[in-house]
Image (cartoon, rainbow, N blue to C red; front, side, top):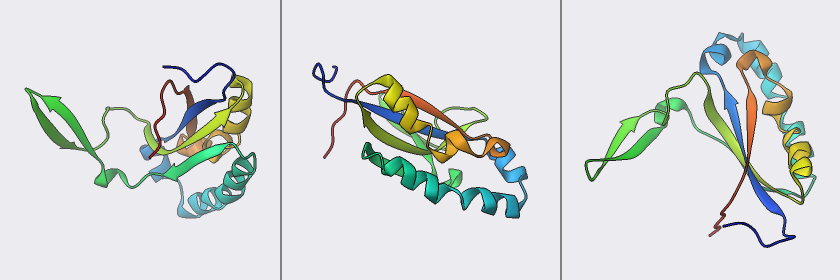
Length: 131
């Protein structure tokens, strides 16, 4: 399912970090890094194209639900085993892929945090249902 022709496309931005790298940072470096985020978040929101933006909770509180033998199994932690995990997400609406990339590049995880393994993955959404 795609958006109607000519309609803006919604994009999901996943903001990643590497827990081991982030934990190895000095607390004052983490504070200096995190203190820069609000201004970048505001710059992104000022485009008028951000629909949702959120930071996710600690890894210890995450659970994975998956079907196993016809039942739902609940386990601790992120869904996949990887060195990078999702720490936040955003949804933007853009008229072109280039516009979406321009807006996503304003996100703190695309601009800062190299020492913490920050990165952003931008994914066009085929379906979006808001409550």
